[in-house]
Image 1 (cartoon, rainbow, N blue to C red):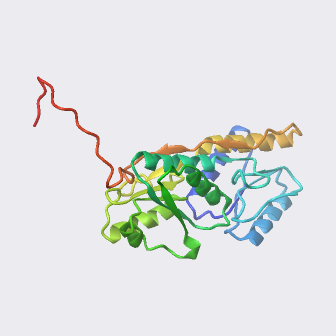
Image 2 (image 1 turned 90 degrees about the vertical axis):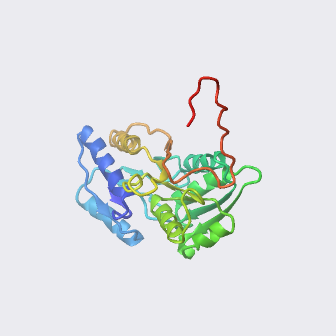
Image 3 (image 1 turned 30 degrees about the vertical axis):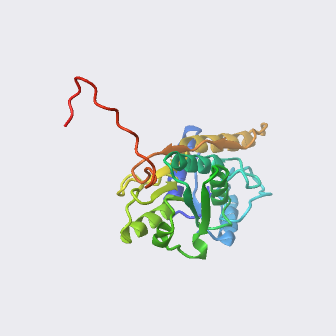
Length: 269
């Protein structure tokens, strides 16, 4: 298995799921890190081939494609990546994130990504944009262009930030808090991938979780079919799950639900 950046907590979680699925099939896994370098990715693949690997599972570096390998291969990236075999439904996840915030009354959004070259991030943002209702507006910011002034965005009326990774959501959340803004009182923040820290920070981060066991099982099954020279299924999209925590709440001007009037016999304090 070749990963793009083992320092990102998403990829050790994926590697662990792949290893568990492989063990259940009587297979073993060697893991290489390409350090987000296309040249290192190609070298890692060649090392695996030289070591006699029967097949390769690869999460490609941002902006790269993998094809014409001399052994069975599975690509895990996004639906828009040529050769992708299995992945989360990133567009569905983006749509779900924005719909969650619109239901809370938010209408002015910042969509925050790291790089335009990432198919995963672009798909997630495309899903967000597809869910914008009439009267809603969204500005897309890319961290590769520089870190936005989140406090200024909040002062200009942005009430919700959707980041394509929990790592980027954490940047927005901490900078807003450092500038004296309340999350979610003034601005709601939502991320992606349900990374290990997301439930432990304050407030807990609302996020879209990937179903790692299902992705891993599908990847191993796809590889096994190739090893058996069997017919292959179509690319698999695995739904993402919205995990609601405390970093999202009603928009500041969203009317609170009316409390029912006390009925006879009710005790009020």
